[in-house]
Length: 66
Image (tube, rainbow, N blue to C red; front, side, top):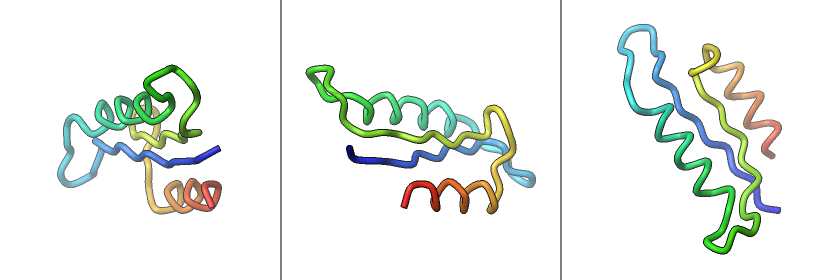
C-alpha cells in the first residue's frame, strides 16, 4: 500500500498560524480512500493539535515513513 506523511502545524512559537491542522486532517481523509471507497494511502498524520511538533518528532515520523 502507498504511504504518506501529512503534517499540519499551527503552534509555532513566534508566529502561530490557523488552519494548517484542519487542512492536514482534510487532506488525510482525501488520501485514505479512493472515490469508490477502496483504500488508497496509509496516512500518518502529524499535527500540533495534540502535542508540540518539533524537529525530533518530524525526523522520527519521516524515518517511520521510509
